[in-house]
Length: 245
Length: 245
Image 1 (cartoon, rainbow over the protein chains, first blue to last red):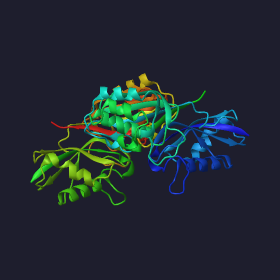
Image 2: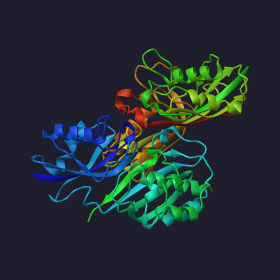
Image 3: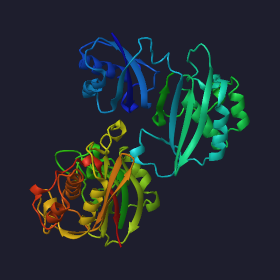
Image 4: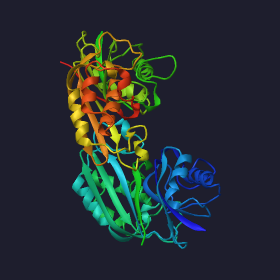
């Protein structure tokens, strides 16, 4: 028995999210089917975390147990053969049997891509948020900086989500800009349901002058979901990286 | 009666090329339908030139005649409303009645995008050619430089194409590189059927050492199609720009 860890890249547009479900095709279902066909063995993959419908990944990490005799360094070839062109295994390696993609994860990084100009490109459809409103970039970064540290993110979780604690630690949070494109980068020890998308929705209101830095501080103190910004589209969100010890 | 000139951006992946045809959905058909719905008037658009199935455009230029009373500066809004998300009007302006997108064009620029690394991204599917072979970048540019000038491009046209003359003038031809991405840029007074894709296929053979600079020189002297490289995939080709007086 081996424990195999895969790094995946996928475009989330055509899927109902990572997790297998009854009402829609999930990345998990497609991936498990491809592995089953490639290894002639039924496996169940564990991801570092779910991604919602329409959310993309540059480096999602999953693991699964297998008795295959295919050498691990060749494993990605047959799996990729059975995967559609919007999901791809970038690498495969054997890991300790105790490794669990979700539980062993120490840090996760997401990026959120925004187009802030007037000529949204067809090539950015489903991949970048079109947000043509005037934004104060320095103010955006002052707000992003407030997110760093340990806070009660109760205001930044989907209201019907059930979770033991809404406290999370954020290691870095900042915006970068290149021409009309703005990218939000956030690294933390974990994220609540919809948390990054609500944070971005809230910071964009700050950048437009519709919320103040004091409003953000208050929201970070276990504030109310209704006071935060809206959940922005999943199309701009990418799981960038997952770090382990 | 007004002559309206539109600049269009489109992803060619889902279309059977620009030109209207019986066996597949064309960009022309979708665009004319959108204009007909937006202006309640049947129009026929003239493009700067056809693009093949799967070829993209950053700035395709078309014109059409209309009796609409919608102000030209507002025209793109209703047309875009009826267009699918992979075709978009970037701008609209009124031009002289004598303007013809095809006949008035003086220069056209195409770019061809190549990924020359080992980890082809899902985000580049249908948009970039995956070409993992070792390439001599300096040699590529020496070959590209030979393309400049006026030549008989008989070796670089689809063999069953009918055309009055295979002589064309190329104003610039060069490769740029950024990380594992290589982009070919070519500007000319006109292009034969499949010409850019055959030029790229031939220059890639040069870059791999399978053709010499002398071979390229010979091909540029009205050589034989069979001696040139293969027609590379349309997925990496973009109509970048069309210039008028």
